Amino acid sequence: QVQLQQSGPGLVKPSQTLSLTCAISGDSVSSNSAAWNWIRQSPSRGLEWLGKTYYRSKWFNDYAGSVKSRININPDTSKNQFSLQLNSVTPEDTAVYFCARSVAAISFDIWGQGTMVTVSS
Amino acid sequence: EIVLTQSPDTLSLSPGERATLSCRASQSVSSSYFAWYQQKPGQAPRLLIYGTSTRATGIPDRFSGSGSGTDFTLTISRLEPEDFAVYYCQQYAGSVRTFGQGTKLEIK
Image 1 (tube, chains in turn brown, yellow):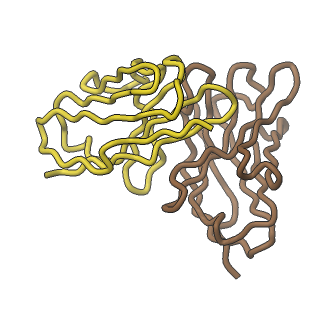
Image 2 (cartoon, chains in turn cyan, brown):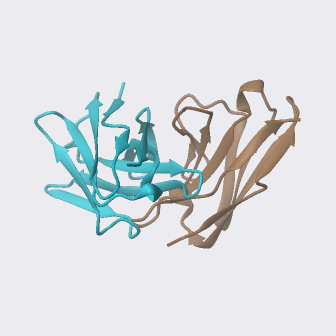
């Protein structure tokens, strides 16, 4: 079955870059029918979709307007994984970050285990 | 951006009772792109319903979804102890996905 395994640091200093990775098993990051998403959850903002990467003959990205100027989501086909980079973080970026698969008509059907990231000096 | 507002914020019921959770969208949403999730403490959300009314794999038939336009409903016909959790609605029409703020279903 499809599984997503997240990795990355749980503590990031303000103004630095938050970096997380999501390793995929049982599916391919290059799938023509799936998209690979990052979502975060905090008490103040609830569940917030951040963006996705997907392959449809070429690579595409969609990002939420709230983070568009600071975010990159990149696929790594050699390792069958995808990553999140969020630049210039502030304490407001403190949240649990999830990766998730979406399929067009089904939405987020597979989720990673979540990573608590705290932004603090 | 489509804003989803769930009601009530908290619902207190007993096992065996029927639960009705509501979600209202700030503008019309295609029923093909509306979902419900269940989340328990320390876990990722779990997909329950997609396309407004289709149960995800392995979801018991006591869970059902309905609605159209701006008003959607999740119904749990007979509550089991494991159903007490937080429930989120979500729309996935267009390129931006949004979630409701959640309804906490607690044991009365």
